Amino acid sequence: MRGLLYIVLLIVITGCGYSGSNYKCELDEAENMIEENPEKAFNMLNGYDVAEFKDSATMARWALLYGEALVANKLAAPTDTIINIAVDYYSSHISAEDYLSRAQKAKALLSKSTGHSALASALYIQKEKEFMLYKERARRNQLLLIGMIVLLAAIGIIIWQRQHIKLKNAKADALIAEASFLKKSLDSRKNECSALANKLSASLANRFNMIDELCETFYESQGSKNEKKAIVDKVKYHIDALKNDNGIFNEMEQCHEDILTRLRNDFSTLKQEEYRLMVYIVSGLSNRTIALLIGESIDTTYKRKSRLKAKIASSSSPNKDILLNAF
Image (cartoon, rainbow, N blue to C red; front, side):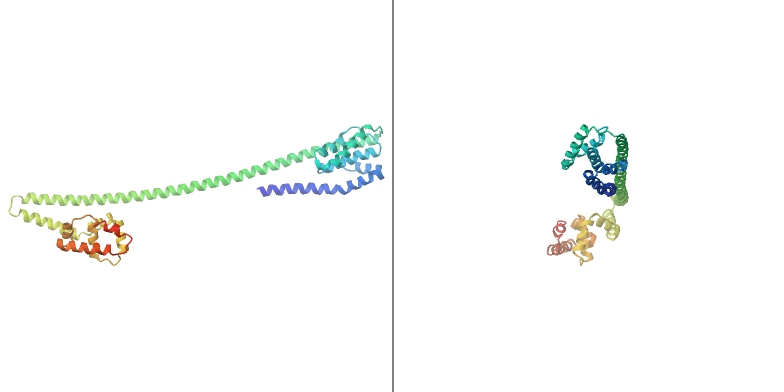
């Protein structure tokens, strides 16, 4: 957008520079002619259509030469309008002191001149009108340029606003996508929690059923000779059921997934019996319970636990301390 503005300004400046250089040679010629042939120089300066000038520098120089031509031809100016063009312009340009001095001198001489010519006065008035047309055109061009700048600025603001809105929409879309992802994650976690809750309820129901059966057996056998045998048989039945129930074993694994994953990663050659023993250990089961579940004596269970503990302790596993804390 800024580049487009620069291009427009460059075109305007280039056009003005070209128009100024187009009159420069002719004005140089008129200036050289003022002393040798002031009448011809005056006629030459009157031949310009001042309204067609493109820049104020050309206009100021023409006004200066026109005033000097009037002085050279000993003609009086009806007003100071034209010479004031040069005086005002060069007064605002510090580097044009020589031209300012010439303009002020010409103005002073014109104020003292008494030579009158009806034709010169008519031409002078005509040039004043042309100058007014130039000022009007310059004002329109200035307003046009301002309008173009405002238009370009408005277009730039619109483009910037659109980009800003696009960025905001992109951020909003990203946030919506992230929120959607989080919602899906929460829904997934919720489903997992529901599944675990159902599994826990089923597990508790099984435990309650076991307690109910033991109590029923105790009540039915109470006071009979077969009381102890019946209770022992029922307990042995449930212990055997626990040993062969992979679902309960899987539940134990899931409850301690983190530490068991470390064990599997660090001890890939671990035997299945050793892994099963470790599952019972991290689940917090007593030595007697473990002995019943693996079908070994308590002494054998102690020895197996000691060998497994020594195996972990002598290893270079980065999780050694965590695993040993389970014992």
